[in-house]
Length: 91
Image 1 (cartoon, rainbow, N blue to C red):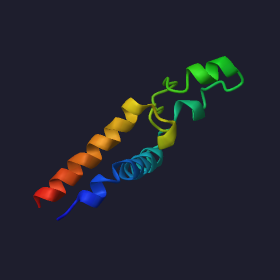
Image 2: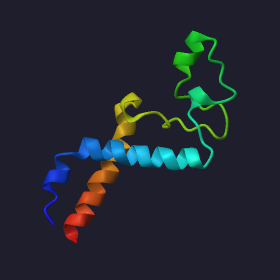
Image 3: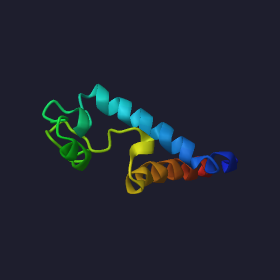
């Protein structure tokens, strides 16, 4: 299998992987810290500083759209996509 096309589109595939993961986490009852019921959005300074800080046990700091994530978090999805592409190539 020639995976060259997919290798050239790792960023698109990574976003799709993230979206699928995010949908699964939300279906399990998780939410982002900024949508947590315990989150105080009335304080603008707190809102910015705590976007990636857990407020409760159901908060997940990566439950944001792909383009809002820091690069080091996006890299998790890129690594997953590249591993799947390598596995497909071995088939």
